[in-house]
Length: 455
Image (cartoon, rainbow, N blue to C red; front, side):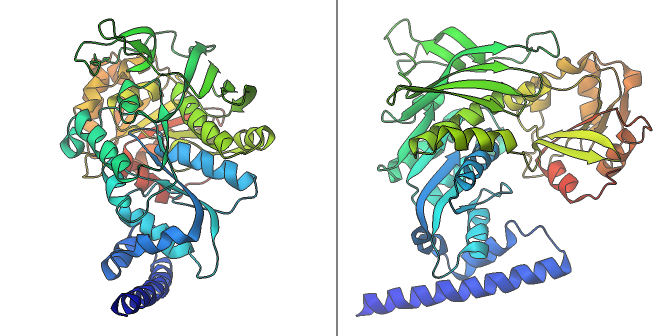
């Protein structure tokens, strides 16, 4: 009796909180105080700590996406593929990926008598295990593990430990693992593996190899791994000369041709013995990996080749992940940078004929430690033909880094106010001049709220 009463009261509290959440969000929008991506979730969890446990029943299937880089793009692509397939999807679109952000989207979209076909949840690595205390997803995609915000997350072993603990809490989930990353592969021995057999770069914008440092990773036996092919960072075809450990056999095997502003993927579903071809209108190998993760999961859930192809052709990045905008008539590309490996891969794709704005903050959400700037391959910009404008709280530190990267002093402009920096980059009367904006996370949040002339 007491149990039944407790369940009833819990459900009443859940629905009451839904009402409060809607009213709070309406107030936020009227007052224009915040973007509303986490505040409502924070309030919701305060009033109903087990709120997410009730949300599980409102999605027929659920997928979590975690890892250091690519979470927002991978989950965004997958959600868009499923929506193109006429599925109803609830998804934390704007990348608010801690518990408050996940609770926020459910609080605003759940309806008492409606079930979504899918929930696609982007989850911060450190919060995935906390998410699984309440909401265990049917599927988990892990993209990669790179060094990121050492002052917040510590060494890679700590980040890997967070995800491994989460997997241990949810043993029945289907785990999609990037087989090219040895750190990801070690998270589970029962994964569904995706990876690239070969990578061909068909348009080397910078005519150079990356100068970013590549760390040596050890096998589970403690000996250094060797590589037959190494694509970037630790990702590639690895093996151990001592114990015989090697990259696992793939369930979704692909090759990719990388062009200046898109990629062509050929993907083989090994179990089904079928091969598919897809064009991904996103720049860089890192986005090809994101697309392969989303494609693999979509194929696993039975989405047709034609639907996936259609969705990838029309998918548009949002929130600074290769996001395209028009500012004062200039085509503008916004690409988040936040750690050495991710930044170095983005820098390989930068149009050296564009005006470049680099906006770096060191707020808590960025990580206070900005030593990653010195490990990132800003030497890729040494042949930039237009201005490189540094901005944000650490604009002067960024300018110093560019000086040591070999960029001529006269090309480096410091404008600490981010909006002023972007407007300066967009002040040319030549509308054919393009702009590239490379912001850290909180700088990106500011840019997202800024209003610029389009024409």
